Length: 286
Image (cartoon, rainbow, N blue to C red; front, side, top):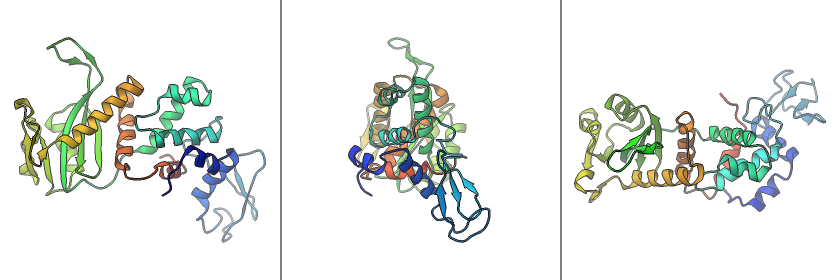
């Protein structure tokens, strides 16, 4: 997978027509027959003045943007692709105000485009295995004063493989009824799990995991290979980026932002995530 610089991006996608051709090829290049007339290896031509292609044999029209994040958008397709590119090269996220400045569009348009691009970064994959660290953190809210804690914070639960993938989810609370089902779904049985000494993790050895913990309240942050430094590092990057780039994230959309940072982390070894990200844009939105 090649590294995509801004120069390379402009060579690949110089205009809207090139972007539309890319969308068509991604979605329909491997189609063996026309969906309407059944002709094998159908030939299509671009309909002048419209964002669609027509079968030369039966006239059936295909709209490659239909059902995608670009559906019914009046914004230039190249601008959409450029925002996807910005998300692919950013380490700390891309705010709607930054999109607004780059494209010269309204804030409302910029916010919608950024939100739609984040929907391409949904989490998935097989359960984590090997050595996994788990932890919960709190995002947002306001400091009520020294010794008084924080108000209106949102709970985020995370799991990370050492040297591998991470999963993070916005949850209602840090109680066992909420976290244990997610832990059992996200981590393969028999996995070594390291955590802090929160009450919720004390039953892990009873449900098929090898568990050990560190006592943060006693100033213990590592005991040989037993530590949660990997997941703590991910939280640190997440919080610095949210504070520095977005400043404030609502609870309603917090999961979208978590997905964004999980997506980048899980592909940190790739020279560029743009090819995968833009290819996923050609898939239909469920």
